[in-house]
Image (cartoon, rainbow, N blue to C red; front, top):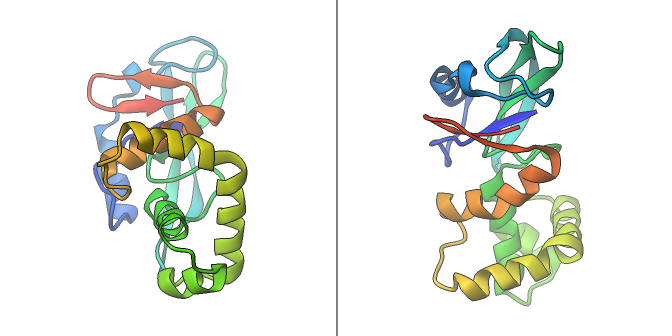
Length: 176
């Protein structure tokens, strides 16, 4: 799985994805086997991304294949957290609501518009894995806007590297 930094953050859709894919220079991408630039388009698959409470978009994700080792990689925009349907800004919105209020999960669900079950899962995941990290991150960057693109990319960069290795290219940041 390869993740690239997208410039679209609020209303991501198939057209945004196509524009991002056009900017990727395959000759700068390093495969897990170590070869650089040995990729070609291989296949596509459908993935869903919930960009807003009432707006889930269907994306056709491009897969590329390495000529050297025949390994395939999906090209995912940085707005997507691997293995999650919610976009990064939505996850941050729910976590922010939880951090800034003493409200129950049901109240946060009503405030954000997401189901109680989804909000509960995200808050449990946040408390288990991210609370300490986010607290220390915010103590250093106390004036940052949690919904800003820069914050979201910085915060989730480590989450992306749980699954992928970072590679810097000339035109875009690629996480592989």
